[in-house]
Length: 270
View 1 (spheres, helix red, strand yellow):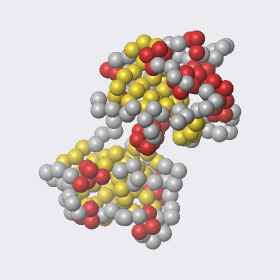
View 2 (tube, one colour):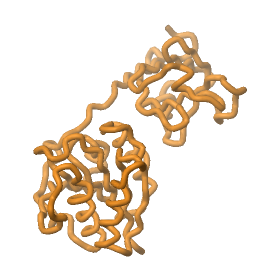
View 3 (cartoon, helix red, strand yellow):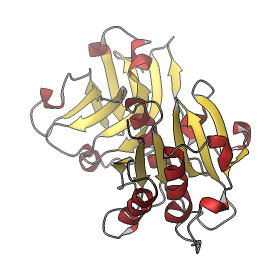
View 4 (tube, one colour):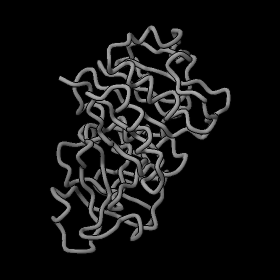
């Protein structure tokens, strides 16, 4: 089975950057299957890229190579990493983008990339995705051992993003979380997981969800469960609580932004 390399960037599709990275991989490893995971990450939004990678990786087979380039520090002293986790390999800058895969239960090993013989020349200071990470991904896909790419790294020394605050008070039936992602449709994904709500109650109809001045009662079964333009709460495909608007855009309708507080309460608890 051909190796799989996924690409996640903030490059968009208006310039040649994504195509050039694919061209480099195709020239060095023509049998590889390239999959575009996402190129619409907000510019320099490392946290969004980390979230997308975390949500997607469980659905890829063992041995998949994920190449992620959201790299505001390109050309600086920041390191580039190859991390093995979940029986997959993740390539990217040491800026927090690989945070989800540094968790104790997932992490296997990490390498600081230092293999100049693989890099393209001349080496650009502004496009390490093309000149370093794409050739390294191709080398891995064609059999290079991870340990051959550089020096061992201790995960304790690697850059990690701070987790958004999540407070769960099961005694009083309260959860305080935050919006962590807004998707293309304007749906608001929070950091409140389905299991967090299940820890409060077995009856999701009994909960109240609050965002700014908006109050929602219970969980919907589908985005189309309510009439058009009605605000609803639902457990999304990633397993997290979402706020949405039936046939509408919740982010615009609610004036929502990432990091907004979202609260869940049992019944009429205050």
